[in-house]
Image (cartoon, rainbow, N blue to C red; front, side, top):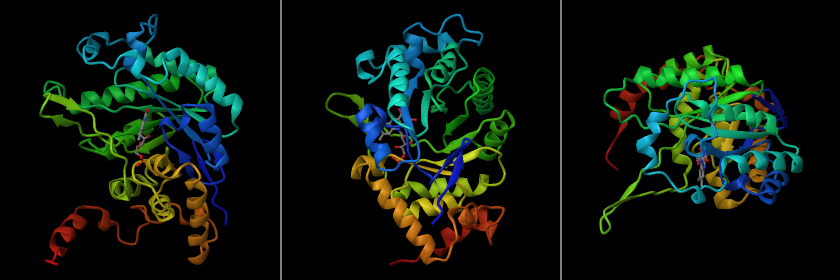
Length: 331
Ligand SMILES: Cc1cc2nc3c(=O)[nH]c(=O)nc-3n(C[C@H](O)[C@H](O)[C@H](O)COP(=O)(O)O)c2cc1C
C-alpha cells in the first residue's frame, strides 16, 4: 500500500513523524526512532528564554522586546534544567544530522519578535532540514488585545521566512478567537506548515507547600477530536501543509487525521508509552485498513473528510454543536 505523503517539501514514505520530545535528546534514541521507521523527527524546543538569558541574541536586525523577560526570568528554570543549552542545541543538530538520514526538524519556542529569532539561521547553518516554530503563549495581560498577539506571531514567521531558506512550520494553539483567520494570515506570509495543536498542560496546586506544580500527563486518543475538527476546517483552504500533534496513538487515529487533511502525523505520547517500534505497528495497520477498505493509496483518502469535500460540511460547524447537545440520552 502506497502511504507516501509530502510534508514541508519532503517526500515521505508515510506520514508518521516523531514529534518534539525527548526522543531526539540522544543520538542513540534518534537512531532507534529512524530504525523503527519514522519518516522524520522533530527535536525538542530551544526556548526564547534560554537564548535571551544567555545574552546571545544581540546585534539583531530584528526588534527586541527584552523588557518582557525581566519578570519571567524570576520564575525561569535554571540552565541545568534544560537538556540542551543554545550552543549544545546547534551541536546536537550537527551530530544528529551526521548520524541519520531522515529529515531532522529543529524547534524554536517563543513568543516575541526578538533577536533570539536569529537562532533560526544558526539552526539552518547547523544542518536542520526544517524548522518548527512553537508559539505557545498564555495571554494573561488584560491590556493586550488578541490581534496584537496574532500580529506579533505573524511578524515572527515573516521575519524567519526572510532570514532562512529552509521550510518553516508553526505549531499553534487552538485558543484564538478565529483559528481560521490566524491560519490565513500565516499562510499569507508563506509559512510552509501548520502543526495543530499544542497541548496546554495544566498546572496543579500543592496545598501543603502552596506551590504551583507542573503536571505533564501523556495524551490519549481523546485529544485528537479537537485537532480533527480544525484539520478538516483548514484542509484545502491554506497553502501550508498540515500536521497533527496531540492524540494520535493508533492507525485509526492517523487515518482519521489524514482524511481530515493532515499531511503528517506527529506522535509523542504513543512512542513514549510503547517505544519507537510502535511506529511500525501503526504503519502496517494503516496499510492493512486502507487495503481492507479498498483504497489504492493514502493520498486517495487525504482530505476526504475536509470541510470542502465532506459530504456534510455542517457536521463540523455550529449545527454539530446543536446536534451534540440534543443527542444526549440518559444511559
Ligand atoms: C516529555 C515531553 C516533552 C516535550 N517537549 C516539547 C518541546 O520541547 N517542544 C514542543 O514543541 N513540544 C514538546 N512536547 C509536546 C509534543 O511535541 C506534542 O505536541 C504533545 O505531546 C502532544 O502530542 P502527543 O499526543 O502525541 O503526545 C513535549 C511532550 C512531552 C511529552
